Length: 341
Ligand code: NDP
Image (cartoon, rainbow, N blue to C red; front, side, top):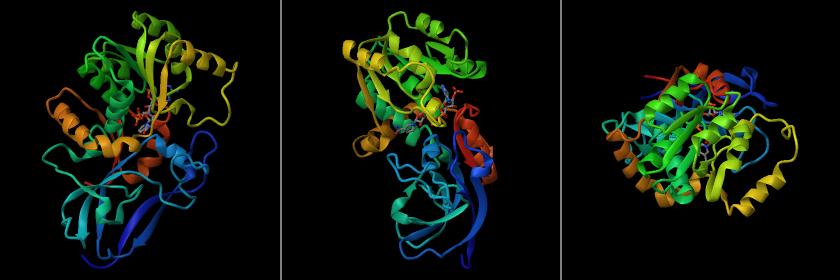
């Protein structure tokens, strides 16, 4: 291939205050340089949309640098190699990359990972067999440690992290209680084999949860915070484990939640119930556990013990709206953008 390649890309136009709006994003085109020695030219097939991207839109550094205004939004991608200037990758191969919200990219060959389309649909490298699936696997193996007969609770349970958490817990012999928004998602949790499935929007959600966990809760895989966490904490058993994975109920917050200070009661529970509340970012476990994850999860997915759902939206231009919707539960399954065939 020769000549200039144009990339259509979505950049951060301005930083959101509270819930992001379409005006926080802008679509542009840019000419890409030809790949240099050791580089590859990529065409994006799938772009992953993930909750952590909301944090990157803020100016404050969290565990990662923010996206600067005017920069391409970050994100994992599955891409086709259009041109390679490195012996490790060939033209036509499909790779996992981190090109962000754009149609084309020039990347270092050593920063991409080859995918085998014969093993699993390549989009799964962004979901059940990728970062979110790994988050579930590692958070359970290192912190949650489900034992036979124990009770696990997880919210955002139809998403890629939560659905994997519940299904892995079942494989380990635990009872899994899934929480999701709305009847369609609750029905899907029942179909997946969760032992109980609850709608966090129900007015009597806290009572429903109490009834669903007659032996209390041994593991609360924390994906959301907010009202779900408020309902869960009083039900935690002595020695319960809480892998703190995400707090999506608060990602668009502009201030402290209303109501009384909950911190003393929270600490009191940690103390009197000997709780393990442990936050983690999945990257810390990659070196140690990624090979195990690919092997075990690969088997579970191919033998159907772990099922997955993808929510595929069409075209890069649809990314901002889909992303905004995910933060309040409009997605149903792992949200990916199909950027090209
Ligand atoms: P999902 O696809 O599950 O999307 C997020 C879901 O959160 C929404 O669909 C919605 O589902 C739910 N949600 C939003 N607001 C609320 C609320 N107020 N109360 C309850 N549920 C809410 O996302 P992922 O599976 O990709 O991510 C799940 C969590 O894991 C996120 O918090 C994310 O930040 C975190 N994460 C952390 C990682 C780490 O390394 N620590 C890595 C990857 C993800 P519903 O309609 O069911 O309410």
